[in-house]
Length: 267
Image 1 (tube, one colour):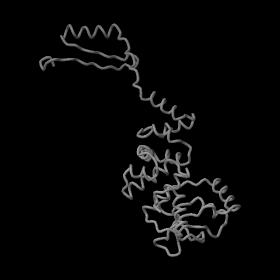
Image 2 (cartoon, one colour):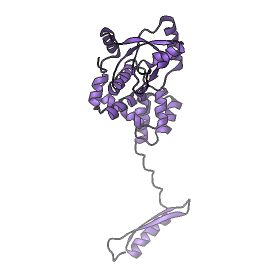
Image 3 (cartoon, one colour):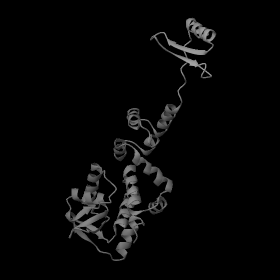
């Protein structure tokens, strides 16, 4: 079975083909380096542990022999079930033992998490980026494998350019992709996020806020010159024959003079 299939299809194919499916000591299994998910909700794991304790593990995990350690296996799919089984104090866990290579294992691990809606958008984006960087996929090839559009792959990847603090909030689901997508590339992204959280702004609210920030500010009306300043400008034109502009701030006793010349002789 290829890793590009659904996880359930891989499991069914393995079972029908008589693959090596057996109970493994739970301590023999370690997470694989390709696991895209970093955030595991402790309450959800406890609920799953209760279910496993009462009804058993309904679906086996998928592992492969560890390339560097004898009697150990790398977890490809099913890390939540593996973690919950530990909480449930199981000594063994049902596992499909495969010989997937690194590329196929990374595909399957990412697909499983996406299909089960377990990943935050940042973990999903990091999973895509790892496949793009390490295994040379094009965005279209990756989109075909995971069943997403190429534009989705491209847009979610741009989130990785956000500051780490914002990415952490996306992982913890404090913020949504819609709320932060307009902040990509902005130097004031961190400050805007504080405002979004404080005022509970929706994605549409954020877009409206940024539109108002991006509008050019109206020029401040110039202060009306006093009669004395105007008289000085007229005097310069009549006595020097030059156009002179005099700006004076009476409040702060500051100003500047500019003289317009049209030839070196006038200068």
